[in-house]
Length: 100
Image 1: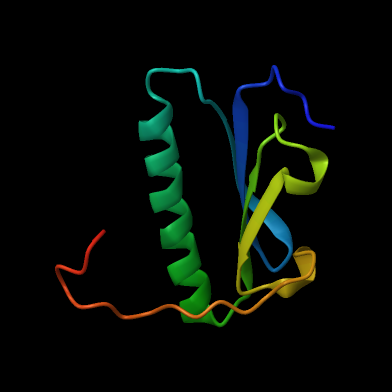
Image 2: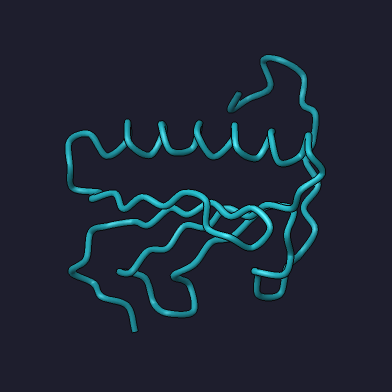
């Protein structure tokens, strides 16, 4: 069972199974979205660098308010830290595609 009164999210970034960056964000803060955006940009830059070096990486979002079986979202190139990892394919959509 999650902690429904905990409004925070924890964002972690791993390279080679080691936590390289971690931040807790209070989602009730007026700056929460800016904090999330900044963290996502930082993690994307770290992922690009890891890819360039041939290193495996993983990003993780933990929501303590969610039920335990849905509290973690993990993605990246390192399946060792993931539960039941599944390959995801991206699509190259043309500019102006609805939603872009």
